[in-house]
Amino acid sequence: MNDQGASGMVIDCESIGRTYREGPGKLTIFSDISLRVAAGETVSIVGSSGAGKTTLLNLLGGLDQPTSGDIRICGERIHRLSEGRRALFRSRNLGFVYQFHHLLPEFTALENVMMPCALGQQSLKDARERARSILEQVGLGDRLAHKPAELSGGERQRVAIARALVNDPQCVLMDEPTGNLDEQTANSVQAMIESLRDRLGTAFVVVTHDTGMARRLGRVMRLEQGQLHEDHEVAP
Ligand SMILES: Nc1ncnc2c1ncn2[C@@H]1O[C@H](COP(=O)(O)OP(=O)(O)OP(=O)(O)O)[C@@H](O)[C@H]1O
Image (cartoon, rainbow, N blue to C red; front, side, top):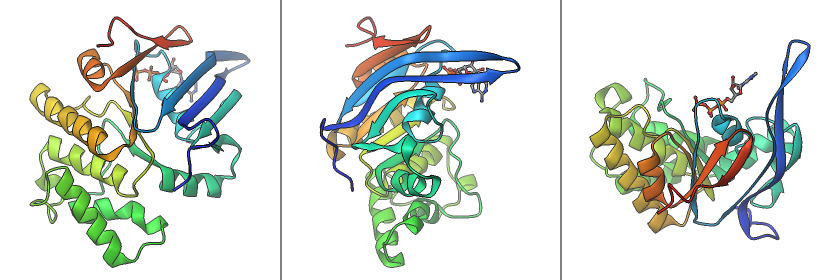
């Protein structure tokens, strides 16, 4: 696991911008966004559709390159790493959860959660033990051998969260983690994220349209018209 760099921040981005080419012109989504997230902190990012929330999350996760500015994750400028080193860095330090679980249908819950361990140094036995333990922590100790089709929507999302946590990342990036769930299931997944946050000391950055969930998770930032600012109306 990397340390958190000189600033002590898990995420420290300074004045980042992302511009897309659009035919002969350019589309600037944002040009000057700064964000710092401390170890164990949970930050939700809200904002209207098309504001650039997913774009920002992809930059934080090293899945996209900024047009300008500096992104440090655990002290490392990920956008400057080669593709191979970036992939390794991501697998060691970051976890990802999306609106749709993206589990592999032919594998069991346990095998799906073990997958990210394949990039690491762990033995198969250690990886299985780690995956089993994290599945127990998300309340799925009795669903290890179930394939995704044999799980409910909420259970699948719990498996996806367990998979994001299996390598003990410093930070988990979530894009609409409850967006595909009914209200009751969304509430239970949200409660689980809160409990993991309190127990594991992992930082979470959660993109969501659910301002109620954002408020309950803690610090809320709003991305609007290219600006990211603290949202005190939504904040508790
Ligand atoms: N690869 C791309 N090329 C050009 N434009 C893009 C690309 N990816 C995203 N965009 C544009 O960037 C803007 C921001 O998109 P983004 O998906 O980040 O918004 P969002 O805030 O996450 O929206 P939503 O809440 O609807 O998911 C949109 O106008 C989108 O059309």
